[in-house]
Image (tube, rainbow, N blue to C red; front, side):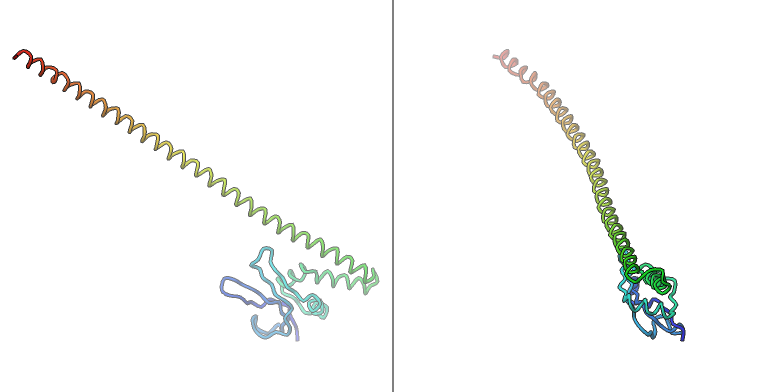
Length: 191
C-alpha cells in the first residue's frame, strides 16, 4: 500500500483550513486516512502550522510520499532537515548531539525570521494607518479651507448687500429730507 502525506480540506466556504494526514494514495482527498499529523491554516499571516513532528518524521523515514504543498510545509517545519541530519548520524559524519545542536540553531533562526516578518507586518500596518490619517487630515484641511472661503465670500456678499441697502436707505432718507424741509417752509410762507 503506497501512502501519501497530503492535505485534507476542512473549514467553510471561502475560509479553507487543512488537516495534514497520511492516507492511502487511492483514498479520496477528504476521505479515509491512516493518521492525522497536524493542521495547516493559511488564513493567518504567516500561515499557522501545528504538526506532530515525531510522527511526521517517522512517516517520511518509512517512505510516505508528500504532495508538493505537504513537502513545503514539512520542509518549513524542519522534518526534512532532521531526516538529513539523521542520515549524517548513520554515516558517522557527526554525532547525535551535534545534529541536535545544528537543528536547534536552524529552529532559532527560523523563529527569529518569523518574528521579524510579524514585526515588519505590524510596522507596515501602523505606517499604512498613519499615512491614511495624514491623507485624511489633508483632505479635511482642504475642505476646511473651502468652507472658510465660502463663509468669507458669503460674509463679503452680506456686507456688500448691507452697504448697498444702507446706501439705498440713505438715498431714500435724503430724498425725503428735502421734501420734509420744503413742507415747513411752505407753511411758514402761508402764515
